[in-house]
Image: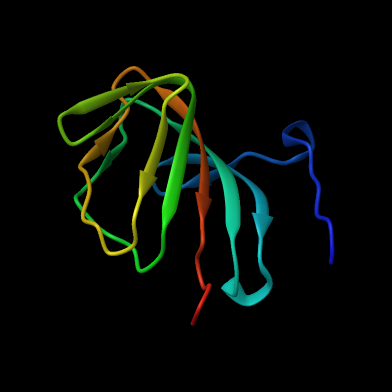
Length: 106
């Protein structure tokens, strides 16, 4: 069994389609879980969508809107695979820890 560890402060923040991302763990070839910190700003507007894997967000800072619900810092959001959700916005800015089981079971 392997242990993978990284400190957020040692990871470069990279521009992503809807803000900035710090990739904390990515499985080789997308074959397993991934974890990242997403930094979303007022221009974030992700349309309703779904994923073929489970996903979890933990709001670290700010507020995140998913649909008509606002999630403040400290909120944990679990989304089962194939569940449509959104739109996702962060009008005042927000920072979330995201975990996804991408690739598991494929």
